[in-house]
Image (tube, rainbow, N blue to C red; front, side, top):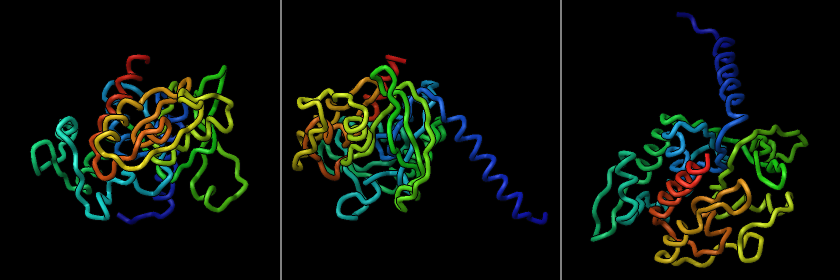
Length: 257
């Protein structure tokens, strides 16, 4: 068969267009395709919810790829091992209660299983703003990351979602946009993003799950973003809390859908 460059281009454009249009009015929009965001999307999609993840970077996985100091191994605790088992990520017992996994296998497997569950992931997309109606966050304003980086004056597009999940990690980008632009007070001690504390794995892993909740009407925090918004410590290259956080937010949202 003789290949036609124009047909190749049309196939990409038309297929992507259909995928994007189908994601403009959905149940849950997740911002950030790190481990917490993907796990959250996976459990939602497994329960037949329409879910899309918007990722600013070219690659998914957040900080999980690099493990600790670019040693591509991650650690999870006993409570979170079952989630890696469910995804099919192989683990090794290090000491009682500590398990390691290859970070490359973990990210690629979680991503694959998430997409196959029905989650649509759009990389190279940034969130410029949130949509607010009747004092409730109900969607996102999106643009290409390249437009943002180049500081071009190009208008964005909007999409609607019954719930939005901020899984943008340390930056807590959606929560900060919401407090700056929408006039909504966050459900924190100060009404604003508090910021994360210094590393303390034991406390950080516990609070990241507790802090994974609705922080403004229609907006949930997930993953490291939860501690950044509500003021918990960071926990370093242990990722069990990330996985448990994604699962918790998915369960909470499912109860409301």
